[in-house]
Image (cartoon, rainbow, N blue to C red; front, top):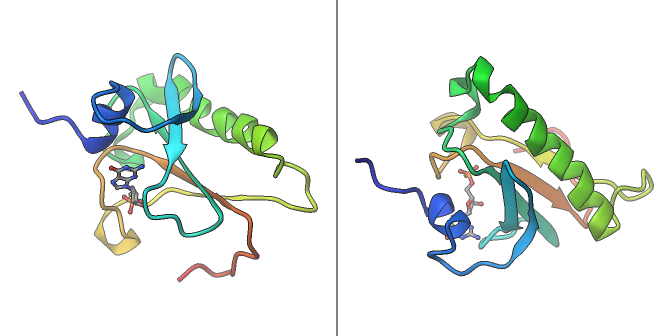
Length: 117
Ligand code: DGP
């Protein structure tokens, strides 16, 4: 049996991390190394290693990640267009992926530059 990812351990409550949001398909918690005043990770409860490895059966889970982002932004008061937030998914080494468990970064609270580095 393969080892659990660090995110699976958080989802399974084996590592303490307050959850910002949870539903049947996803959980969200603050990033340990925040890159903005708000930096939340939204993670599927089912292990999908990275977005490019998702399959048709994962469609509901993929949708749930984005729907959760909107709900979290609303809860944190950053959904208003005058504020805003950015969603990032890193797939693979060149993108900087470091945890092989699909996650959406939700970043907000400062003026985010474009293009990203
Ligand atoms: P990525 O580079 O896209 O794979 O992002 C992984 C993120 O996960 C990175 O921003 C740091 C965060 N992270 C790694 N380990 C932990 C942990 O144990 N707890 C929390 N809350 N975040 C973690």
